[in-house]
Length: 412
Image: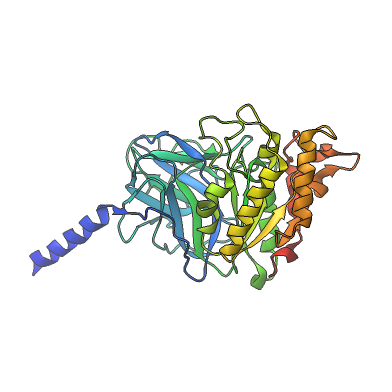
C-alpha cells in the first residue's frame, strides 16, 4: 500500500514537471466574469534567453481575484518552453522583494511547465491572488533558451512596466526576498503580455495605438493618457467601472505596409490589423476598443513614404468592421498635429483622415484628440506646453488627453 501511494505521488510530480503544449492560436472565448487587468503588447523578438529568471512587473487597472497571466511567443521562429512561472504582488519597483506570502507558483493545465509553439500564447491556470487597482504584479518567468519576445518601452521610461533579472543562473521565481535579483530595468518586459482576473468591473477598454498610446515622453513625468483614463474610471460607482488595457506599440502603423522606421520588422510590432486578434479581440472581457493610430502612416520615414489618406481610412474601416463583427464597440480618436506645413500634402492627408473619423459614422463614438491638443494660434502643431516634440504629448499633454475623455462614451 505504501509503495503504491509512493508511485502515485511520483506520477503526479512527474506530470507537474513535464510541459503541456499551448494552443497554436489564441482563443476568442473568455469565461464570464473575467476581464483584462493590464496588457503589454509585444513588439518583436530579440535573441535567445540566457539561463536567468526575469521578474516582469505590471500594474493592474481594476480589482480582481483568481488571476491568470498570458505568456506569448508571437514572433519566435521556434517553440519556447517555459519551465517555471511565479506570480506575486510587488510593493515597489525600488526593490525586487515581493509582498510576504503573496508569491504563487503558476500551472498550465495543472503542470508547471508549458511549451508554446510559434505564434501561440498560453494562459496560466487561475491563481488565488487578489489585487486592487494600482497594484504591481510580478510575473517571474524561467525560460532559458526561449526566443525573447519582448516589449521595450520608449525612454524616458515609467516605473512600470519593467523587470528585474536574476543575477545568477537557475530558477529564482520562488524568491520573495528579491535577493537573487539585480536592479530594476524600467520599460523592459519579456513574454508576459496580459493579466486577467475575475473582477467586479463590467468589462475592459483596450487602447490600440502607437507611441502616443505607448507613452513616449510621458513616462517619468507622469502617467500615460490611458493611465489617467483608468484613474478616472476607477472613481466611478462600482457598477460603471471598467479596466483599461494599453495595446500601444511605438512606431506602429494602422495600415499594412512596410514600417517607416524599421526595415527589420522587430521594433514596432505588426501593423494594427495584423495584431488586432492577439492584442485586442482575444483578451477576456473586452467591450470597447479605442483606436488612436495613423501618425506613422501619414508621416512616413526612411523605409516607407507617407501614406495617402485613403490608405489610412481603409485600414481604420477594416479594423472597425472586425471589432463590430466581434460584438464590441469601437471609439475612434483623431490624429494629433504633426508640425506639417499648412497646405502640405501630409497636412491635407491628416485633415482628410480626421474629417472622415469625425463624420463617417464608422465609429460608435469619436474622441477629438486633435481639437484637444492643437494650438489655437497654429492648428498644425500641438500646443507648446503640452508637447515634447512635433508628435508626442508630454506628461501634461497626456493628462489633458485622459481628462478630456467623456466617460459617457463607455456607458453602453
